Image (tube, rainbow, N blue to C red; front, side, top):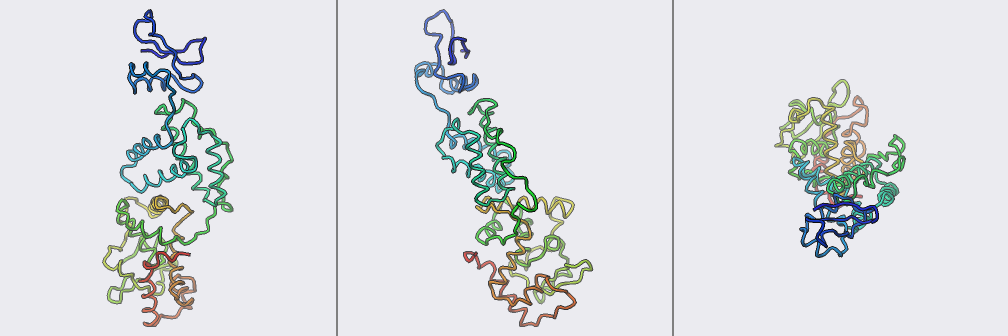
Amino acid sequence: MRVYKRPDSKYWWIRDGDTRIPGNRKATPFLRSQYTKTQVQSIIYENGMKTFLKALGAEVKYKTLRQVKVQYDKEINSLHANSSSHCKAIKTYVNGFIDFVGKDESIAEITTKTIEAYLVKRIKDGIALSTVQKDKTYINQYFEMAESSNYIEKNKNPAKRIRKGLIPKITRSNQNRINDPIPDKFFFPILEDNSIAQYERLFWKIMRYTGFDPGNALTLENHNINIQEKLIYCERDKNKNPTSPIPIHSSLIHEDIINLKEQFPQKTIKAILRYSLKNMRSALVSVGYDKYVNFKCIRHSFNQSLVREGVEDTMRMKVMGQTNIKSQQTYTRSDQESLRSAIENIANEIGRDI
C-alpha cells in the first residue's frame, strides 16, 4: 500500500497491489491541506487496509484533547517516574488549559489564538507570571507530543507561534511576590505526601512550626535544642547569638532534625534551597495552589498562626527575631507555656485560612 498525491487532486490517494486492477487506486477523504502523508498512513495501519477501503467514504476526525491527554500523561509518568508530585504538577498546568477549551474539542481546532486567550486570562486572574510561563511551557510540550505522534500536522504546533511579549518579562515590580502565607489546607497535605522525600518534608515542617529561616532550619545542632525543657533556639544574627527559645512542636520531638542538610543529596545549602523550593512549588500546584511562593511564605504562615492564637505582639516579635536581641527580655515560664499552646494548635488551624 502506498499513499501518494496527484497534481489534479486536493486529496491524498492510495494504491494497493496491482495498479492495473480497477479499484486498487482510490482517493481518500483526507485533504492534503489538513492531513500529512504520515497521518493518513497511521490511520490506515490502525484500521487495517480492508476495513479502511470499505469505509473510505467515512469522515475521519482528529482526536480530542482528552484522548491525546491520555498518551501525554503516560509519557509524563515515564519521564518523571521518580517524582509523582512533579508529574501531578505538570499535568495540572495542561489540565487547566484543556478545561478552559473543553475536553472534547478536536485538537485540530486549537489555534495559537486559543492558547493566547488562555494565557491572557491567567494573567488577568492574577496568577504569578512565573506560573503563566510554566503554563506556556507545558502546553507547548503537550502539542510537541501530539505532533510527534501524528495527532497534528508536522510544524503545526500552535504553541510555537505565541507572540513574544504576551507574557510580560518578570521583574521585581510585576512578579507579584507578596510572600503571602500559604493556606494550611494546601500546605499540610504536602507534608503527608509520601512521594516526596521524608527529609524534605521534615525541612518544610521545621520552618512551619518554628518560623525559622531555611538556612537555620537546615543547620540545627545539638546545642540548639533543650530536650528536657522541650525548647529550641535559633541562631539568626551574624554573631550567632541565640534568639529567644521556642517550644518544640510535639511532632518534631522524635524527628531527626539535627544538621538536616546532610540528608540532602545536594552539597551546598544554596543548591538545597533551589532544589527544595522547586519541589515545594510543584507539590503545592499539584494540590491546587498555584500562587507565587517562596520560603518566606512559610515564615509568614507561622507568624499568622501566632496572631490567630492571640500571642501577644511583643512575644511574637521576639520569636520572629524582629526586635534587637540586646533589648529583648527573657520569657517567663508562663510566656513559654502560652507560646507552646499556640504552636501546638497550628496544625489544628486547617479550614480557618483567611
